[in-house]
Length: 117
Image (tube, rainbow, N blue to C red; front, side, top):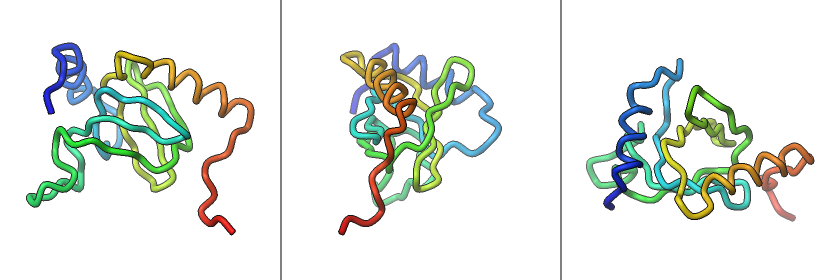
C-alpha cells in the first residue's frame, strides 16, 4: 500500500523518536472506531516472512485502554498489551476520531467485555 509523502515523513520521525519501550508497530492513516485503532502498520514486532504483519498491511488493534501523548506522537495502549505509535492520522476524520475517543473515555465508556453472555 502506498502512503502519502506527509505520512512517510511522519513515519521517519516516529522511527527516530525514543519512546522508552518497545513499539509493537507504527500506524499511518490511523482512525479510532468503537474503541479500536485502525491503520496501516509498519515495523510490526511480529512480522513474519509469510506476510503476516508485514509493512503496508491494514491492522485493527484490540480495544484501546489508553491514548497518551509522546512528544508530537500519540501512543495507543491496548487490551492485548500492545503499544502502537500513531505516526499519522487518516486525513478524513482520523484526528477527530481520537478526540471523540478521548471524550468518551472521560465519561467512563468501557471497552468491550471479554465474554458476552
